[in-house]
Length: 341
Ligand code: SF4
Image (cartoon, rainbow, N blue to C red; front, side, top):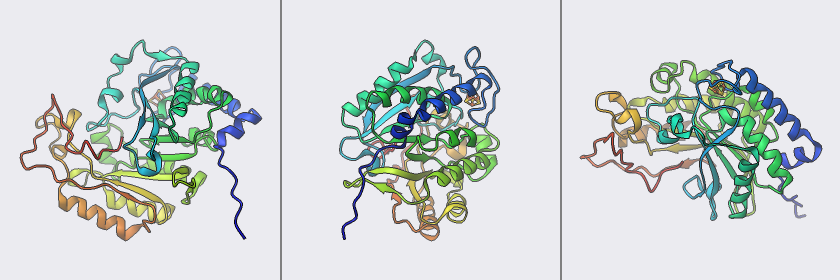
């Protein structure tokens, strides 16, 4: 007997009908008054003061575009509807989007209304994108959900991708339960000292692992895929391999396998290149080169020994030319054709 499969409807569409989505938006909005939206817990009233993320109570968007460089289950044929949020709650010295994440002065005066943000979501849907991909959303969750209330009322029906550095609070993630369809967190480090040195945050592994465990509680390891093979609901963890074992990829993979499940999907990424402060001569010597073939092989071996890898993504490794030198003024990405945003 053939299984009858109901058409997919993102969770927020149902929550919008019952009024629950608007209630969650109000509750999230209240968190702006004494901000503990991320584990930085600045405690500022973002209607009148700014915390570490330098973002008030309105959305600030750097750009939006159908993106064809995400994992194939997200980009598909028509692209992932990426919305790049400006500013960030981390200060990664090697951030490949530092012009967006760490240049708050360049976004002064570029705050937009909830209606404008909703119109961006709907434009991406009209352009045929397969999902709405919130890139670096942590510090702007209340604004995003307020806009989602408006967009849902106007017919938005694409899955929401929460594309995060994972320095998220569990309280906020619980309010996103049923709103976010696809969690796409980084797992940047296994060693707190690395997070302190390279992202200016002392407790990254603890908070990121706690946040990812909450994402896993919501989605489990299984995926829901469309008949065309696009991800509609699930969890995909990204690990960017860094030189000199700074990311601690093996340790993170072992944590995923033992604390979550060996069936969790991982995207192992080889695209690191020195940029931003990591490209400054002598500033962060351990990050001043792309990864070597040996480092990539060790990460691959760790992946194969820890996870079932039924649904893992493995980037192509491209060896950097021997002449490669980071150039602070014009940091070139030798992996530009392969990069995942
Ligand atoms: S979201 Fe921004 S203001 Fe709020 S705690 Fe995090 S860094 Fe501080």
